[in-house]
Image 1 (cartoon, rainbow, N blue to C red):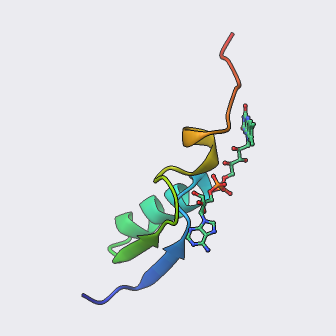
Image 2 (image 1 turned 90 degrees about the vertical axis):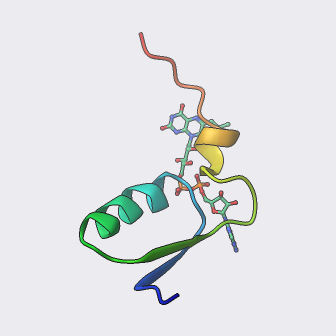
Length: 50
Ligand SMILES: Cc1cc2nc3c(=O)[nH]c(=O)nc-3n(C[C@H](O)[C@H](O)[C@H](O)COP(=O)(O)OP(=O)(O)OC[C@H]3O[C@@H](n4cnc5c(N)ncnc54)[C@H](O)[C@@H]3O)c2cc1C
């Protein structure tokens, strides 16, 4: 398969860019070396909504 964009890492930055590219009809591949979702989803974010 051919891709228009290949992104390295699957964190929030990639997610937002990938959604916009998909909505524009682009074929996107994401290469992730650890858990899909990145630091915030899997390890990081500790913010709590009030
Ligand atoms: C303890 C902690 C608490 C946090 N709490 C908050 C919070 O409360 N609120 C908030 O807004 N932010 C918080 N953050 C920050 C937040 O996690 C980051 O700002 C956010 O994850 C950055 O997103 P990103 O997509 O740039 O990178 P990341 O989410 O780090 O994603 C990068 C991805 O790329 C992958 N990757 C890297 N190199 C390669 C490679 N060579 N090949 C393949 N894959 C690769 C990594 O495995 C990772 O999955 C916290 C961070 C930490 C560590």
